[in-house]
Image (cartoon, rainbow, N blue to C red; front, top):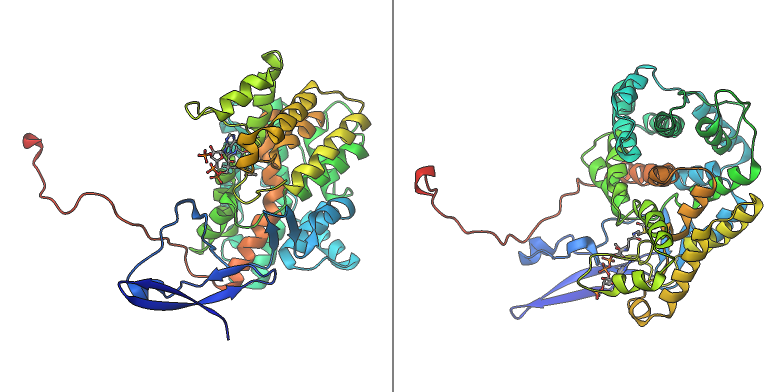
Length: 427
Ligand code: ACO
């Protein structure tokens, strides 16, 4: 028998069940609130609202814990590869060797994109932001894969998933290559999943591709760290779009658009642009700290703060360490890394940031690694989308298999009451 929480209003008391998650998180189940009381809850930004029960990702923002399907992010980043993590997130368990091989074979069998898609890419100006391009191309994929729209059976769902995991990296590579003026190529089925992505992006038409293990490992790790983060803005978008039974590709295209914003995934681009601006301003971090604290200035310290983490984002900790080791392994120096570290140190000692529990988030250091890998700043958020793809897929699959109802929040109307229409001549 679950415990009950009560709400009193106008002398009447109403009781609602308390739900407890496997990590002892408590929630008041208000499914019947409106029916019982005639009232709704009001929670702009959903700061206190659980939209679903989910078995995919656990995060504890107070303690700085992140786990995929019960596995610590630190352990996965060190010991697993991205495709294994994708399988884990989507299907719930780490794959056996055979399962992983089969999964990869199924993906490879679909890792081509209809040639007509190149015409769509050609229609974009070279200056188009890659996030707009990749969101459009993901939507356009539906037209060429109509059988992936209806995913009402497990089998149809599996093939839609495999197709997306296969074709999305091709589109990412093409988005980058079009911008860089490089021919649109395919990958190589003899390579690992991430190695293939690396080759598709960076192979020069006039030069043999040479594998760079440091770069591939760094990319793999970044993709793992971005792979899921429970009900964030883009994931909630994927779930809510999918709740209308829109197909997987359409739902994920909507998630990509949600990710684009600078308060979400777009922050990785914004961080690097901010660090570059500070570098160009004689490295004057104090000036930017003051701007971030000034309530009359809209500037925020990009890459700082998080809706859920009120402690170190564990991903930021791993990425910071990785930035150091990747740069030194590649023999590269980046003055921006020193600026980032200086800014972090100042923020962590400043009462404004300390009192508000603002810590570096995943985006604070990721751009420095992307840059060391030769990825241009406008592509950063696309790389985030590539990493987040398995998470979005897992969340979509979970929601559809559970048969969740269509997402449709309510509102408190604060507009005009009924009033008579006034003819144009009288206004
Ligand atoms: N710089 C300066 N002040 C900040 C920052 C920041 N980066 N982040 C939050 N604050 C301040 C707010 O002004 C507010 O101050 P107040 O209480 O005096 O009004 C307080 O801290 C709380 O901030 P909210 O905006 O209410 O927190 P919320 O949970 O709504 O926002 C968010 C979280 C959007 C991430 C915010 O911290 C932010 O804008 N950060 C910068 C952008 C960023 O890095 N986004 C990436 C997030 S990670 C991801 O999506 C992958």
